Image (cartoon, rainbow, N blue to C red; front, side, top):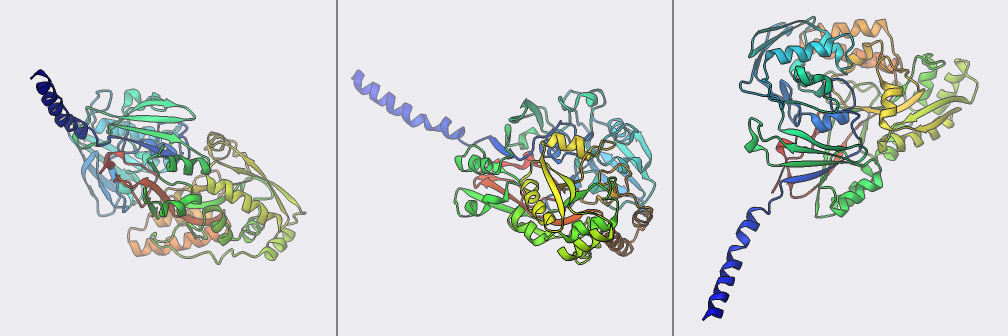
Length: 497
């Protein structure tokens, strides 16, 4: 009898066991791969897009949120209105929001954040935008009014970028390593050179809607290692993965491949503060030496659309300027001779880690060699590139480099005197002022076309292509974006099916 009772009890236990196991079987964590490691975790004081990939909408939030289709939705602002001349915007702020250190979010925090971004010592990548605020009013805790010096129809979009992240005043100085925001995730651990962990913040205002309790981000720069990490299952998702292995993932039923458009511009940056690169004939020679199709095929396996200016197809007022500086090696040689350059012209070519830069650099060097330019390749780490080549007021210690500018609406950068390209044109600056002071869309579109043509004619950079970004994910992972209006990974929308 005892034996029978034992068997019955054991059977009952087996029947009951699967219930809690099934209840816990749905994954609530994810491992994501990233090509570049961020140099810090404050998106308001540095330009690296990798900071936004980790922090935007996860740790920090902005007044507005940019959706996958490029539209703008409320986030920390519940609503906003614009004056007819598009120079004053009034935002009504969300109530009951707190920062992760317990401090209240209010209009004072917004005012502090934007004034900090505009300060003389600010290193915010969009400093010029915040300096264009003529007045910032906070009439009450839930209202912020921004008055600009010129009309800005894109302001709601621009404030949804990482540079517009709202920081808590008391913790702002240490956000680089100890970030404090209002978002659904907090920094867990950061093992420099390897990985970073985000943990769900239990006190987030809408914590029940956040499905992932933990996100681990692994930094994998090597293209072969990226592919291997996905194939082995060590990584569940890799946004903007190397283009080299996309074909094999398309045929593997374990994965979903998303290929999205962007507003990014991949360019050969030319340091115009160095001789003989300050001579437009030399810059035009460099552009004439570049076969864009060969660059697109070799550097990104065809995942790109040729561009001829600092602007992308699909944007307001886009014009095709690729014919302004076409591939013509013989013309390149003649231009160098006209400029009095004795071959070979020795130039440095500093390449940051992304595969498009490293692979593209090899192709570029070979193309330049054919016209009498010896581009000496120097591979540098991302932090080195940012400090040596890109940093505002930095040494700008480079001749040529390859990089992708991922932000939309950034023509304003060409008007900034300390921008790393060294372009300084009174004519372009005046034209850009016309662009931003023209309220009607048709008028702005015409002027934007003129601006693109001027940049192409001045050969401001070697304009290469608008990239398409492939993302490879485990097929059971949902909520990952296909399109790339800006670099971000909104983990609040990710979940397992």
